[in-house]
Structures are given as C-alpha cells and as structure tokens.
Length: 620
Ligand SMILES: O=C1C[C@@](O)(C(=O)O)C[C@@H](O)[C@@H]1O
Image (cartoon, rainbow, N blue to C red; front, side, top):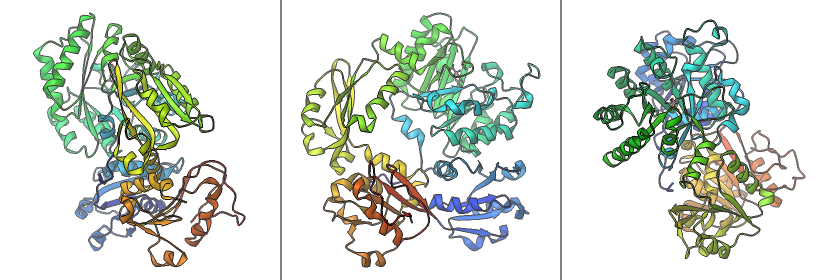
C-alpha cells in the first residue's frame, strides 16, 4: 500500500436503529467510527441533525418507517440476539443493512469489521485480486457452530470461507424426511453472525440449487433473491449468484450489492459439457455481466476435458482482463483442473462432515499434486534472528506441514546482509524474514525496495518471486507497519484516525519509523513525538513534545503508540495517567492494544516489562 493511498475521507452518514434497552450499541458504533453520535426521539427530528455522522433511534419509536429514507443516510438496523430476538423483517425491508450481534466474544471488533466493510473502508476483494492463487473453504455443516472449535485449523490455507446455506439444517428440522427444507432466515442470519465473529476471512454466501448439487429449491426465484438480498444486508463479502436465476433477479442484486462482490456460478452435471463450444464462451460472457468473478464448473468423464478447460481458460484470460475465471471440472478425473485453477479454488478439509462436490481436494492435496507436477518447487525460506524466542520458525514449520508445502525453513542466528546476498543468488531461495530488521541501506544494492521499506529505513521481509529455473526476483519489504495498522484498525474503522492527533514515544526515530508509516497511512493529523525529534521526510507532519506544557496546549490524541523498549515501557504511565481514563493494561504481556471511550493505546514493546512501582497501571 502507498502511504498516500488514503481511505475514503468522507465521514460516514449513518442512521442506526436499535431495540429498546440496547441503546449502548449506538455508543459502541460511535467509538468504532471515532465519531460522536446523536440519539433522537422521533424520526421527524432527523432533519435537525444534518451534520451528525451517526444518528440513532429506538425501533419502538419508529411509527412511520417510510420516513427513514428522508435523511439520505445508510440505514443499519441492529439486534442483539443474547436475550429475546426482536428481529422485524417488515422494518428491515426499509434498511440497507441488518447487524446481528451478541455481546461476546469481541463485540467492538466484530462491529469494526462490519462497519469497515459496509462503509467501503475495508476491501478484502482488492487484497485477494492481488494474490497469485486464492481458495475458498466449502463448509458443509448443518450448523456452523460445530465448526467453531476447529475453525482455525480448518481455515489454514483458505482465503475465504463459503457458507453453504442450502446445507444448513435447523435442529428441529433435521432428518424429518428427505425433502429439502430451506433453513429459516432467522437461523441463517445467526449462522452468518457466528461465522463472522470467529473468522477474519471474507464470507461467501451460497444457496446452491437442487440442479447444481445443492438443496435450495428452484421453483421460486424470488425466494433466492430474498435470501441473497439478506446476505447483502448482513454484510457478506461475496454472494454466489447462480446463472440460471432470471436476469432481473441477477440485475437487481447487482444494483443493491453495495461493497459486496458477486461470484456468478454455473454448474453442469450432464457429463457432456464442452469447454470447446461457443456455448461455453457465451456462458462466460453472461456471467461477466453481473459477476465480479465468473465460476464455471462441469462434471467430466474424460481426461481430455481437462485439457479443453485449460485451452478455454487461457483463451478467456487473453481475451478479457476482467472478471477473473474460476474454472473447474468435477469428478475424480477433474481433479487435475482443481490443481491448475488459481481463482477461488474450492477446498475441503478432513475435519468437514462431507465434501461439497465430487472430486474436491484439500489445500494440502492440491499442494502435493502441484509439487509432483513440478508446478510448486521446494524452496528455502530463511528465518533470521532470534528465532527461538520469537517462535517464528516453529510457526512457519507448522503451517508448511499443515499445507503439505515442500519448502524448508533455514534458520540463521543473526540477521546479516551478507547471508542474504549469498542466499538470494540461489535458484531455490523462497524469501526471508528477519527479526530484528536490517537497515535498508545494507540491502539497497542487492535488490529492489518497496516504498514502505524505503520510507521506514528497515527491512524485515524479503519477498521472492520465482521465475522458472532462474534466481528469484527479490523485493525488500517492511511488514511491521502492516501489523501495526492491522492492530490499530481491529477495533476501529480506518477513518476513525483520519485528521486526529497521535502521540508517539520512542528513544529514537528509527524505532518509531514503522509506526509513523502506519499512522500516516491512516491519515492521522499531527504526530506528537516524545523521546525523539523527527528528522526524516515525515518530519513535516510531526512535532516534538518537550514537556507537560506542550501536552496541555494540544487536543488530546486519539491514539498513543509506545515504541519504547520493554525495560522502559513503564515511562508511558504518566502520560496515560495524564489523559486519565479507565482501562487496564497488563505490563507483563507483550504487544497489546487497549482503548477506552474511543481512544487507543498501542504498546509495541516485546518481552517482559518492568512493572511500574506506582501500579495500578491504568491506561487512559
Ligand atoms: O461452486 C462451488 C464449487 C463446488 O461445487 C466444487 O465443485 O468444489 C463446491 C461448492 O460448495 C462451491 O459453491
């Protein structure tokens, strides 16, 4: 990301509806957005608060829902499902979104994800478009809650999680008879909520129909529309929209899709589908009309049909730059195509109750096959530095094992530019991480440098892109700032930081450089520094604080970041006390982020901290 690639600067304009006794969701939304909110008593008062970013009103006071639209705001109805379900379909019809929540786990984090996405500030599709291969985990549980204990392990190697809504079954309806039953919207909404609370991966909402190996009925397309429209209201990142649905249904969905993306889906089970036919071309063109991704899948009986698909794929790729094609063959013979497909390849996992389609493979199986076909060479991944304390090498080993990746971890005790220069000339060099990072100047001669690494002046990652047989093309990068940004935006949407002051503590500028880059990517206003004077190119956005008097002169910051070393981390305590709000911070833990009333404190120190004698160590 470029530091000048600033998120949508327009402040949000929201109207939030809540159930009686759940007004506190308004305050949590205000915190997440970093904006003040107004609560009104009658919908007619909307016009009196045109400048307010967030306006709330209790559902019980909504006598005329038809007036909701008059405020020209995004309308989000919210329902807490902890006690007494007060969902009201008729009212939700008048809303853009429906946010379903429970108080635990992590309500603020969940709301930040939801609002960040529906406001267009978090764009998972943009991230996935940049990857060379993407996958979707096809979950097949009747109740997604059964997946939760294993969800982390199930989703290793997955870029998205597909909720097969047609395979869901409400407890009372299971095994009554073999007739397909559509799970109720109440049940499905809850399932989406539970899944979203437990995974950071984007959710694909799929109602696979009976003709295409699913259970969703086909006799009433308006029912399909209704379910898919609800998925948009629930903030699902992707909708699987089958191509057989009437054109007006697909068109209407695309008109109301907001920031969600549509995967146009076509399955052929006849066994006679021809990838070489004009029909196949036409199906792609039709899917491309409303699809951000076009998925075409056929059951095959002859191995040649895989070769035909590859010819089709490369023809489509050279004729159209958009949308990407996810093309697969089903059945055991089609597994070759599941290996070669690179866009949203469906994957299964041994811990899933059933496979979602004939011939589906796990991520590990796909990697093994790619390796045996010489499409995935064994690489050496260099981990430099104190790998035992950081646990990095062990973590990488576990991921490699879980995904059956053929790579080797090579550990080196110390980060050194010489060792890197030796490694990068090898044809099997797969990249490196170093902890602590190396000064960028030491690597500038040997490889290209990302904008972040140049600005921060430190390299902690080397990205290697291999080009068959030859030595890989390497780019020196800095990933630390991404981690800082991700932590800062876990409980707050990115725009919450925009135009707000920040305080940054460090004993020298170089230790704070990644945090400066992250804060600037969030468009913070001035960064006040304590402990160092900025001299880098970012200095024009920074001001040095020499004492308490300086603090008194400026608006309280939205965020304080401490890049002090662990043994000095207690030095931040007086500052936190000065801004003296409630909150708690465990000085013995490693990096942590706490917040109170919309303010954030991020401690980047690593390792055991010296406790402050004046405990309790209260954050602000
Ligand atoms: O469309 C697809 C692909 C799929 O049918 C497969 O063949 O793996 C599995 C489905 O769950 C998914 O929606």
